[in-house]
Image (cartoon, rainbow, N blue to C red; front, side, top):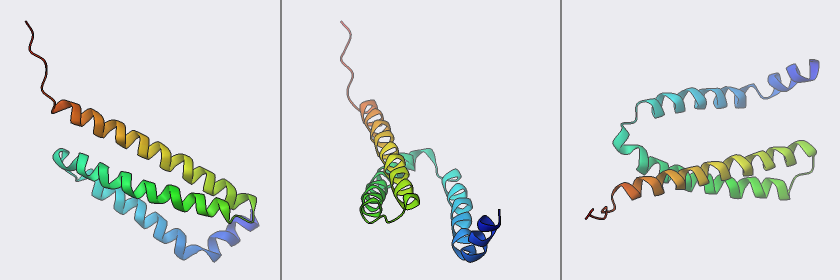
Length: 103
């Protein structure tokens, strides 16, 4: 318990920035109109690709098990986000295709 408290005390600025980012992200995302959702999803896919590359680099330079685990989690979550985003974008693009006429 003491080591956890020391970690929070040493990294309090980083933890504050992460918490603030979470609340800001929730506020921004909740106010996005539905018509802008898909273009923003495409941008998020690009950012997730950068996250995946960064996580792979972290895993390659990891000198501790914790860094290796965080890098692996980053790769998994980034990949899930990219695949889900492409699935949503593909489904949205299918809505704009002309449907065959029924005879």
